[in-house]
Length: 161
Ligand SMILES: Cc1cc2nc3c(=O)[nH]c(=O)nc-3n(C[C@H](O)[C@H](O)[C@H](O)COP(=O)(O)O)c2cc1C
Image (tube, rainbow, N blue to C red; front, side):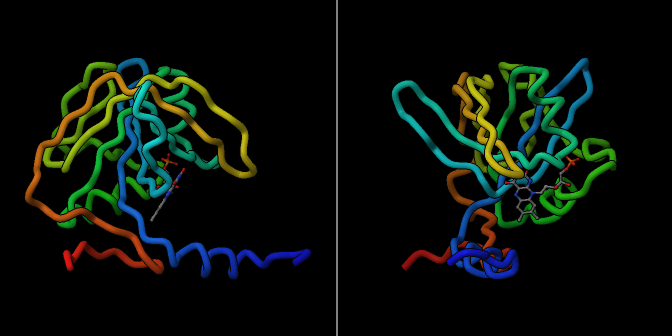
């Protein structure tokens, strides 16, 4: 297949369901962050995670400069937070409750869990990059609530079989 149409890529890749996270950081006292789907566990020993920031993303350069980022895993009832962080150019933290984690990156209140990382490596990859985070601190806030999932272009939740 020589040329692959962008719509076809989106339609095919959207068959893969994932959770949603808010990636946060803090540069010179200013919090920044964005919603992301491209988060995964990478290594247990040492503890590493990966994330793929888009090159058009405005927050990521600030997080990169700070040298740290925190991954906040959203619950099914947090679509409004997801929508807020999927926007650009707005004050995303104005109405939110959060506290600085070990690396100084914001840990959002009411998320299912957080993974606070130091940026270990970043690799160029098309219109995104691949960022590898070394876990400095992590924690689970809620074992009961369902996760926010993204599948075929829509949000939903998890049903155990
Ligand atoms: C379902 C969904 C998944 C997304 N996944 C990513 C992602 O993996 N990486 C990324 O950089 N942006 C992702 N985005 C887009 C960013 O959230 C969006 O571009 C946001 O406006 C970036 O904010 P900023 O420019 O203020 O940093 C996703 C958005 C949605 C709705």
